[in-house]
Amino acid sequence: LGGEVVTMCSKMMMTDGSVVDFKPADLDAANDAITAMASTGLRTLCIAYVDLKTAPGALPEDAPEENLTLLGIVGIKDPIRPETREAVRLLRGAGVVVRMVTGDNVLTATAIAREAGILVDGEEGLVLEGPVFRKMSQKEKESVAVKIRVLARSSPADKLTLVNLQKALGEVVSVTGDGTNDAPALKEADVGFALGIAGTEIAKEACDIVILDDNIQSMAKAVLWGRNVFQSIRKFLQFQLVVNVVAVSLNFISACAGIEELPLAAVPLLWVNMIMDSMGALALATEPPSPKLMERKPFGRFAPLVNKEMWRNVIVMSTYQLIVCLVLLFAGEDLLNLKNKGDHHYVVLRLNSVIFNTFVMMQVFSEINSRKISEIAVFENIHKSPVFISIIIATVATQVALIEGVGRSVVGPAVGFMNLSSTEWWVSVLIGTGALPVGLVARLMPIKWFPGKTDEEADKEAQENARAAQLAAAAAAEEEALSDSDVSVTILNARARWKKAKTFINAYTALTAPMTKRIAISKKLGRGSPLQVDDGDGPTDDLGLGISSGLKPKT
Image (cartoon, rainbow, N blue to C red; front, side, top):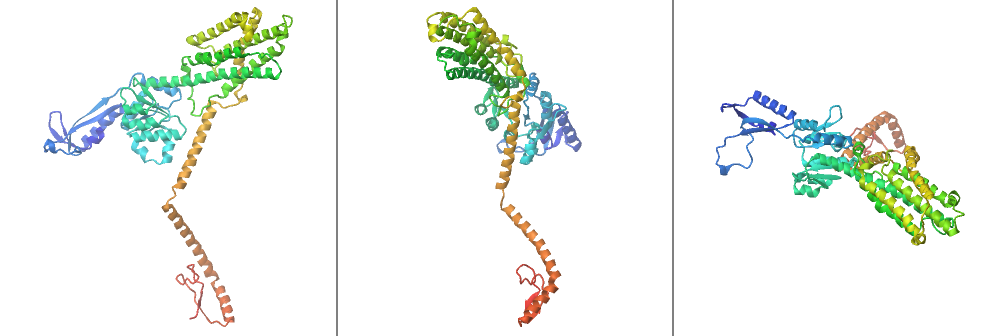
């Protein structure tokens, strides 16, 4: 703003109050001062006045823009918050590209971006001005959209254009804004952040999240918790798939084998369902976010809910649990020496109780395994998850109460289980703890052996598809944009080609004219028709092609 006003000045006031002419040297000195201030992040203002010999009521609506008297140039510092640079560093470490779209001039914007850590020396980062960006073609905008780090002297329309370009290129876009003019960009973005203190009501209505303290550090926290929610959903799905696959497969195989008393009866299945749905969800969803979530790349727009790592864990853990349950089902009587301990019903009931108890113990340790998807240290920071620990303890305590309390009563055998001996308890717990080393082995297996897609593969494929769709749309738009001018250009091209062809035909006609004349004359004379031979020229177009035939009938 200062640079524009200073060019309107024709005079300047000195320190003693005298007014002198504003010379070109003074203009250069003023511009140098503005540049020096802007380069250090100061917003410059030029203070000037003009004497008007007009009554106050007759002043024009537009302020005068010439013959101003310069009073001085000032620089205003709008310091960034101390925590801003650290928040930007966290976001950059999390794979989030931070861009600044501002109305400041390019020097001020660049200085602020460097101070905030948005622009870093040695990294590729493009600084553009809004007017230059607006004059670019669509293809040029697409080529620089990903590289832009600072867009200075921009308008709200530039911010909206940049958002649409980023989304078209397959990026997940987040926008912050506080003004009414920011509402379209906030609405169009995948996630819109409005400032709670400085933001207008229209901006708050258009956004998805309101930052109550107007602090960029809150955005970093939002990214962290958003990733934690997504990761918690994945953990729960991983745990739930194992329980479902094993429970359904076990009872299905038992029924196919002709076993009348299924190993997991109705009441045990209800308890397993409670472990799986309610308590498992609470345990895995209430864990606090790990700072390591800000050290990985963002989840892509089309990242699979069950990725390749999860399929690996589910397949290996389900296979282990199902094999254990089937071995107990078909060979448990011999392994546990149950044949000589009572009648057939008693033996089956006791065996089913061992299978049920072992199954629950395996789910307890599988739940611990599910705390991590690809990491090996499943016990990391478990002491910081009091809810998780409480639910694990409550699950084990309830299972002991069911087996030893209800199992000793008449209710237990009626619903499908009974109390167990200390040896059977040790067998159940030891087999259950086997889920931990099995989970470790699963994480060490090559990922290429398993189905599904990794997050990186899904993101790469989505970007390629988005780029292909964008190219197809651009080609279709060019096709539809074929106008009358394009048609006229095509016709002109056709005429130019015909002109070249006509030149060639004329040359060929001139070359063969003598022979053509003799043949034509001999034929006509043979019929008794006198002829007058004429070499012809362009205007004598008796063939209708702009070419003379060389023959003209005698009139």
